[in-house]
Length: 258
Image (cartoon, rainbow, N blue to C red; front, side):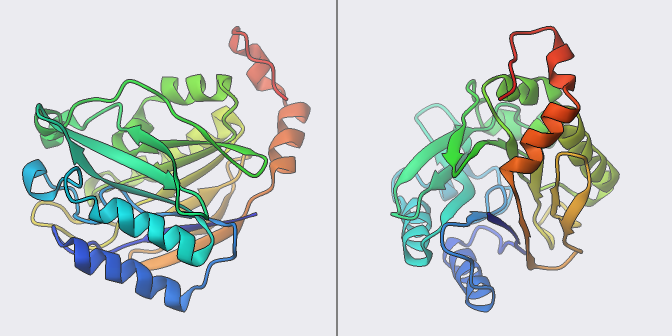
């Protein structure tokens, strides 16, 4: 099965421009039918705190874009964008199936307090998973990567493929590459980290989106520019490694690997 990561140089708070960028990238890289495509955190606006300005809650333009694109290309598609309610914003990731239907939506559990996100966005409280072929896929967003306990919780619910979408800035590049590998190794799972490229009014971003196998081996990696990476993933690799090296049995919980 094929998975793609779209490392986007996000146009600041310009949904139309970012929607067009994504479509143009897939005119060059036509994804396989039934494959899984992953877009960055807040791919349509950049990491903005202007919730009222960019929220998709009323217009639904980004939700419609994602659903239409998934249907047009016959793919599974996940992208991050902003929603809101009367009290605060929600930093979310939504997943759409090849018929254009939304199958799950995840709200970021750990807003980035140091960057002011917690003042504008409320914390989610629920881990979500969805089925993609034989995989049980779990989405997380950016700062969530620093909290291994939620990954363990997801593994206990059957997760064997993690998607982490991000706007992860340049000063902490080393943390990004190390933590992605750590989450793959400790959970004996595929990990896909999709970061943005370019810059916004506050930060510079280094890209380096990565696809990592359950052994911690990097099987695809981007540089610093806008691009699309891809790799084949195989559930048999996860199952064989978990059987051969059954570390998950030793977490002293009620985890029974398949």
